Length: 361
Image 1: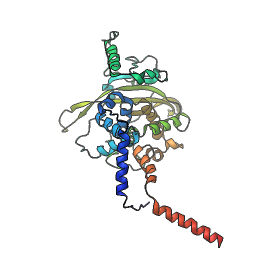
Image 2 (image 1 turned 45 degrees about the horizontal axis):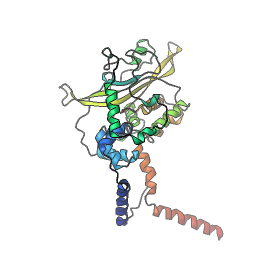
Image 3 (image 1 turned 30 degrees about the horizontal axis):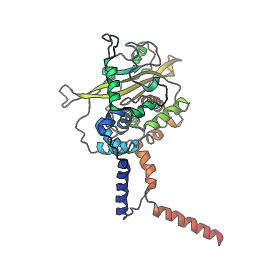
Image 4 (image 1 turned 180 degrees about the horizontal axis):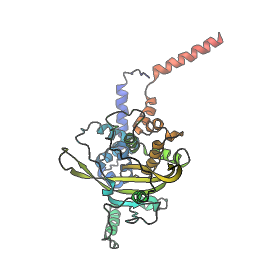
């Protein structure tokens, strides 16, 4: 498809941009990016995940600049990310090394290390808290101090690092389907465009960068029967994941910091042919994304399994899924319809008029 550039209108565009700036400041209210960073945790995590750039400071700036429009915020961060040099790749990181903030399993009541509920909206009644309308900075400080000074049970025996994986115990019992180890170097979808068929590293990268709502909808479609049988969430982990880089191959990796990460492993029962008979084992669907982004990670694990196993429904179709979950591609192509299409429309209009004239003659 070709487009004809429309020239002119520079003054109108400049006026439009000035009006946009006015809309942001017309109420005379200022919000500091530090306030966004401190209070908009869920929004920040979503924007960082979809932009695949882990920086709470930059994400809060993008949120302020975009006036809370998540699509625009992600676009800003992706654009900024494309200007940054790629100095190093991190070494392979193991989520078993995560410092856990939250860890639950809906498959087992008792898990080694225990269920750690952490901070979650899951246990709230979804009722508006009108007291927040009048909340002041002093109120915030009081609540902060009250929580920090509360007596808590002795947690000296609670191990929050190197907690065992639930799936390791199923694997030890021979209940997980075995696959050969694949140490192939992962593909980088930010450096090289995907070509179909894809490999799993490309699929996982695209899903973790995917629009949260779209990935969630596709996971929901799988639950309703368009792809996967009903999975069980083996484990949801949220915590600080250490990151290392290796400057030279012969040197020990350097620790450069930790990122907040959500990891999900879902168990999907499958029939496997073994020794001339079918036995029931579990496949594992995998999801991981920046921040505390649990719904997206669970949905991602469902879609991951659907794409890995293949089938006849839309969420089994990797081209359909991977080309439509990306927020920049989808919103960009939809939004371009607002741009001038005068020439193409006039051509169609003339064709329709000529056909009508010929029909009357």
